[in-house]
Image (tube, rainbow, N blue to C red; front, side, top):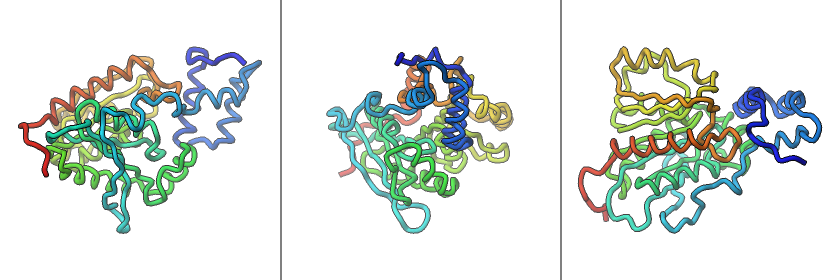
Length: 304
């Protein structure tokens, strides 16, 4: 069987995957529509396998990396008296209070890729926290298909409250200097925008291809924004012009980057939508932005 390459795949296939990944197509309908793009040795199962995330081979910073300290913690959920499980990471041997970064997952729970991003944030010099919004339902189940199904059963506004609670938890953590930012992807991008709306003391918000708040909510934003969009992500991009107009009208601090020929999910290096050049540039911009906005005000040691 020939090895499929990204350049061999029509854009319509990536658009179909986007519909499938966002629950607009069932698995059966997705496979049925993929059949129109199969032929010869390129079978529907081969296309499916090519499009699915590869967590085994694509993780950049693996669990147990000696450069960081990582542990799972629990903090109170916003609803029902339960707890939210989260991955907490920081540079190994750190003795100073660092800026805090909440890392918000996509619409499928805390999968291995988002845990990887949390570890990357720690390597960049932050104390990072990646919550699992599926905790009240038992946590990320091990596959993205099951994760999407589980997350669809939770109310997104309740999940937002759980991430808001994560910011408060991180802000008070012994290793945090009290300055907290948020970065999120897809669903997490919407959460990042909304945390900027809801939290007057959040210091920086970085939504990747995230849904936008309503114009009525924009005046509530106090955090500087750095927004990342993909040129081919027409679904999410539809909301940008109105959002930008509201940001300008309310004199908000923001920078938007549009990545040419990139698809929704371009930062996720476990799927073929990954765009290495755009992802590297976007992440470096994110790290530089957080260093500017969350840097320590002094060399105050971590709290005993």
